[in-house]
Length: 257
Image 1: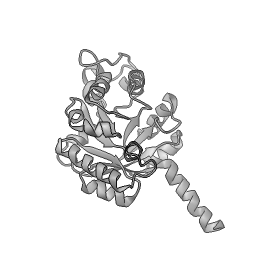
Image 2: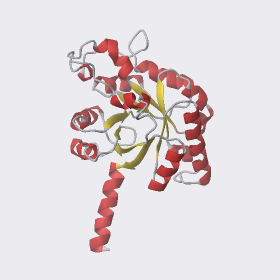
Image 3: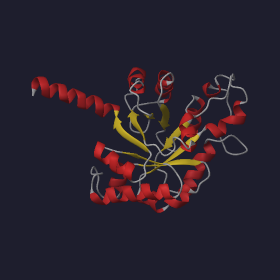
Image 4: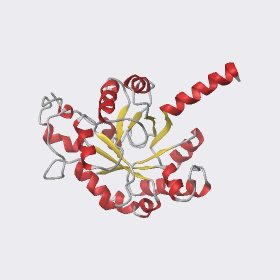
C-alpha cells in the first residue's frame, strides 16, 4: 500500500493553494453520523475536538473512519499537549494535530518531538491504523514527513513568544484562539472586545510575516472576513453544536415564537 499523503500539509506548500483562504468547522458532537454530515458539507477542513467536547479515543477513531471518504481535510485537537495522547491519536490515523495552549518555543519543540519517530523524536513505535496494520509500504520511513503540527496561541505569553514559536522546526501552522486570549487579557466571554481584536489581528499579521500559515477561530462571518484580510488562510467559521442549536432556535421562533 502506498504512503498516506497528508493533503492538509501538502496544500500548505502548494503554490496554487497555499494563499487561498480555507474555511472549516469544529466537530464536537462526538458522533460519527454528525461528523459525516459535517464532512459532506463541502467545507475545506474539520477539527475533531477533544479539548472542549466529550470526544475520547474511540469516538475520535470512528469519526476519522466516517469522514475518510469525503473531501475535507481532518484535524484533531487533543485535550492537552501530552505525549501519550499525541502518540495514541497518531496511531489511530490522525496526521494533523492542533495542540492547545502552546506558550513557549520549548513547549512547541516538545510537541514536535512527540510526533516524530527516533532518532528525530520521541514517538512510540507501533503498527496501528496509521500504518493500515502494517500494510503501508515503508511507513516508518515516511510517517514523520506526513505529520502536521498546529500550535494554538491563546495567551499573552504565547504572543510574547510568537517569533520563537514560529522558528521551531516542525511547527507548520500557528492558530490563534480568541476566546482564551480574551480571558487571559481580562475580557472573559468577550472576544469581540477591541483590545482582543487588535491583539488577534496583530498576531495574525506577525505569523504571516514569519512565513507561517495563520489560522484562527471566527465567531461571526464579519470577523472571518476581517481575519482573512489580516492574513489568516485557515479560518474556522462554526461549531457543529452551535450550528445545530441555531437551527433549532430558528425552528422554535418560527413555530412557537
